[in-house]
Length: 516
Image (cartoon, rainbow, N blue to C red; front, side, top):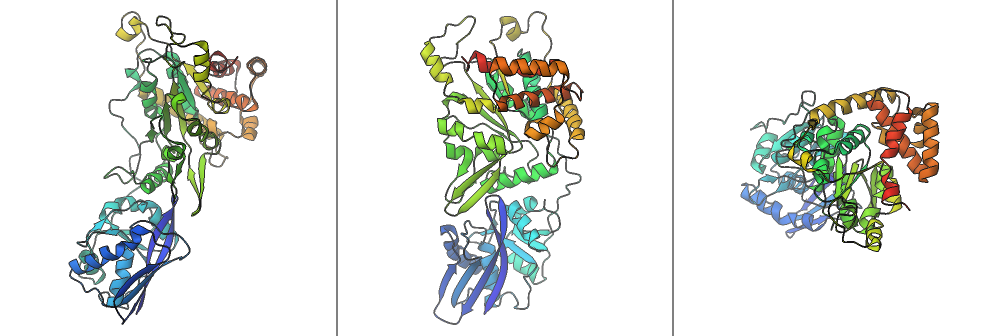
């Protein structure tokens, strides 16, 4: 007897439909799975056999051949267990031969007892099933809420094989999982994280406000203990809330990577990834025999924070260059080419030298000039050129740390976020006719010429800065992008001289630390 059931797999973050064909002949008992299965799928034979018998059903004493189509595409993971089991059970007669699987998709890993376990990439596979015309998806209860985010397909949470067979035979109804995206609250509360906690560092806070309003990359440089990491961790508190489309795309990436938090069906907080400086280039970009997302892609729609930037390997730092420009990471392997989205805000922090006290007003630096140059030169010019805002964070005085003296109270993240949202809304109206242009950092050279209009004084100031600072064409564009954001924060459609002046100040470290 021949049966055909539909499942799904994923490659990169894109799901694809898989047809599970099962043929059973009355011959010596053999169980084979073909169609380029990996080790996890080959081992599923024992899981499926035990799940069927322990659920109280008959496993056929026959020659069973299962084919996973398309047969030329490498399959991996345990998500095909349920579809294979359903195909075998129809061949054995447990499921009536006239039962139609045409508009149904089955995804899930089996335990030996017949219970279903969750799998990676449920959201991507559900999207693929819907696009392939499926009307119903039967999936592990662990993944049901995640899959239910997709509109236009009914998702049934399955806990065990017996429950599913009873549902198919009409003896027990499984209630579909539901997700109402229209009432889902995208606002996020960050416990114990607020800009008001950071004392002093007014200029750095202003720089991060500009960065959040325009989606710009930032480099914070200063001695140990000045609050670089503390400020960086609070950046998500001043970033606009994610849209539902951004949340779904972010959830897809984390689901495929297997790092979706437990009991979370949709990520609504912007990711904040902070990899250790010992991480390899492959760990940042992603990789493996069948490529998986790296830290760059896991920070998509959020923040990638690299603390102690010069301590990262040269290969790890240089792998950032192309994703910053393109907003995506492409990985080529024998199994195929995968592109992961990587639209992130890069935030870097570093000390001015190996000991950390070069230029400190009270503590003496123990590094020689050669050591300082060698340390700073670990950060390449092309990478620095891609960082829009570079700000120095000086050490704090006693009055700033203790709160004594006439000190202005630090602003809360909520107050800064209001200005950021206002600036983003101001920019969105200007870009309403542009396709997928969400922030000033993403402006192309042609869009810069169109939207970054300066007055005469601003143009003259920019010309002088270009000559004196020895800017590259990319550096010139980045100053205009930052100035465009500063103008948006001020509610000005035209870029004026003060906006250009502030944007230039955010590039001054090029000369102090990295220039001649």
